[in-house]
Structures are given as C-alpha cells and as structure tokens.
Length: 538
Image 1: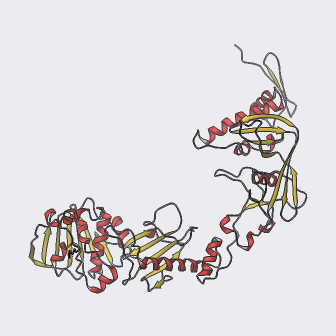
Image 2: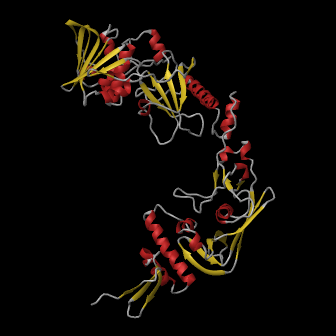
Image 3: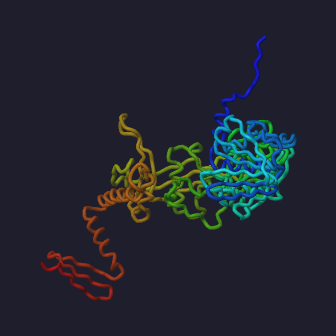
C-alpha cells in the first residue's frame, strides 16, 4: 500500500523574503511581537548611521538554531496554545544582513544564511541581557512609525530615548468572553491611535487587537452602520487565530463564529444601556430574539417626498408644533398615478389650506413595523388643469402653462386636501404609437414670480454629472425658461425685463424713465428731481 506524508520543501527557504508584506510596518510588528513573547517588559529602539538596533529585556535566546528554523517557534506550551505563533517572525527581516546577540553569543545572518547556508554562532566577551537585533533598513524606525504598533502592545517601547504612548485598547467597560477568549467594547469614541487603524468611508468598524497588531475585521452585526466602533482585545489564552503569513485577517474557524456572536450581543446591549436608539425594525426584533429588550426606535422621518443631493425642490414649510402623527405617508404602491408622490409634495409646498395643512412624510422602509409608522396614507392624487396657454419642449421633457392648476389629495382616513398651485407634474400619453409618453411640467403664469428656475429645472431632468458644471447647466436652462416666459407674456417682454434689470442700481430711487428717439433718456426720481442723459458725443 502506498503512503504519503506532509513535508516542507527546502525550496521554501529561497522564498523567505516573500513570506511577509516586505514593509517596514510589517517588520516592526513582528519584532515587537517576538520581544513580547520572550517575556520582555521593555524594548529600546535606536537609529544610527542607517542601522536599526532593537534591544529587549526578555528571556534571551537559548537555542540559536531556532532562529533559522522556519515554522519552529521554540515558545513554551502555554504561549503556543494561547497565541499560535507561526515561528516565521524573524524571517520578516530576510534577506537583510542581521546581527543577533543574546547572552554571550552572537550570529550574523546574511542573504545566503536565510536560504540555508550554515551560519556560525560566535562567543563574545561582553554579555548581553535579553536580545539585541541590528540591521540596516530603508528608513529609520522613528517615533511616529513605531508608536502605532507599540501603543497597544502592552510593553514599554522607547525610540531614540523617547517613550511611546501606552494605553489600554479597551476601557474598563469592556466585557470578557471566555469563549473565544477576548474582551469586547462597543463605543462611540475612540482615540487617534485607534483611528489610525480604520479605513473606509462608512461608519461602523470592528478592530481586533493582537497585543499591538490591530486588524480591521469586515464584519458588522447589522446592516445599518452607526458612528460606532467595536473593539476586541485578545486575551492571553484564545482560540482566535490570524491568517498566515501576512496576519491581516482572522481565520474563519469556530472561535471566529463565537466572536461574531459575542459582538452581536454586546452591540445590542450597548443600545440597551443608551435607553434610546434608531435601529431598524428587524434589528429591534433580532435583539428581542437574543433576549435583549429594547424600547422602540426614536421616530425617524423626513417631511416631504422628493429631494436630491443639492436641495429639496420646492421646500415644504414644516408647521409649528408639527407631530409625526399629523403626517401622511405616500408611495406609488398605495395610490394610482406615476407622479403621485411628486404632486402630493407640490400640494404641501405650494397649496394654501384653511384648516389643518397637508404634510406628507417619508419614512425609510426599514423602520416599518414600529407603532409610530402606522400613519394614514395618501390613496389618490388628482391634478386639474385649466386652459392650455403655451407649450415648449425643454431639457428632456415638456413645459406647459395653464391659466389654472389645482391638486387634490385623498387619504386613507377619509380626508381630502385640495388647493390651487403654481406647478404640477403629469405624464401625458403619446399622440401616436410611435412616441413615448412624456412628463410635462405644468405651470401657471404666477410660477414665474413664486418659483425659482431650480425648482422647475429639477422636474425636467435637472443637473447631469455627464455634462458641464452645475452652474453652466443651470444658466442654459434659465435662458430657455426666460424665452418661454417672454413668449408667454408678449413680444416686448424681453425689452421690459432687460430695462428693469439695467435700472437695478437705482431701483429704489427712480419713479419714471422716458427714452427718446435720439437715444437720450430722462429719469424722474422719487424726490421730484429730473435727470437728462444724452448719448456720448462722437
């Protein structure tokens, strides 16, 4: 019967310089971890003439052969069980020439020494306490560089005579979990040293500290991310493991699943302590499933139904003392008409009401289920148009002026809200089968004075990030809109409009302006004075 067995190919030694990331940061982490595992309480780092010297006060080196034993760590059983050291840390310095001294012995490992050539262990006269490592690196191991990895290492680190900051990774509010062996804290405030290990634009991160080496874990207990950080501080005895060789991710073993479960518990307990929260409804139910009773989420809503990243087109004025229960939900699913939400919004923004105003609100679907989301709904939206005065194709739609517009909203609690408005949006069926239906922005003549160009522009496509700048696109639209209004008012409207615009500097002083055929003009001021202005002499 044929048998096979696992072995490490000697050719792996020739690739020893590629077992790690090859960064200075990676080397700092490995050297500090080795010193701590050797029982060091203090590590001194000095930079001189391009050489880095690291001295620790640990137990020193008993068996120098272990230095070049790839995969053989030589640590005691307790440390092997608790931290699962890989025995490859020193190889982070390959292929550099490194001088290592401990006790009265010393070795110099050169490039060939890392790949298998025998290295002589020498006896020296001056005995060294602990271990000293010296080598040349690309850049100095200065305070700023080292402190990031030393601050949470649990040992004192001194760089060129200056002490690195030492702070606990978690506060005394952290909760210890025997399985998988760690302390967990959910917090809204972290130090600048924690922040250096975070990345990404979103809120909500899990940081795991392995005695100074911090790993950001791509796991969050819920789909909503709050401005929180979850800190996990590994205990001396743990089954949580780092993936080799780079050790920047967690091994997804049983301990990892235990960690995720513990993180979820602490996450919901954090909100339980806060007394209030804004968790989604399914998250609220999940907390209850885990035995964690939470109050209902604080109401989260927005007054209005339409918006964009620049502004709310035709802003709704929120009534004084408005309460959520006075609002109405509106969705395309609940009422007929493609533009129901838009017109319900425009009614609230532009309409006038004798009694209680109509206020539509938007609630994220993830909150549906809480008692405060049980609001009456808009069931029907109607637009009534008067006589058609003028139409233009503009931007990516059509604009039309009517002598009268009104919007009416019917709600599930049996109420009707109706008012004249200056703008509505409708979808008009095509005149023949070869054309698509068109969204038409309906306006009254008063819209020119009551609405901004941006308010109208939004409903005709608005800003496109594939074209010119926002200001340029708006300017072009304003010109087209002005042409529309000018045609509606009369052929001399552009002249009137331009004259009034030019008189703006003295708008509060003049009463009458007369222009003569010889291009001179006379200004009559409000105080009775007259001023004749003749054209410049040739």
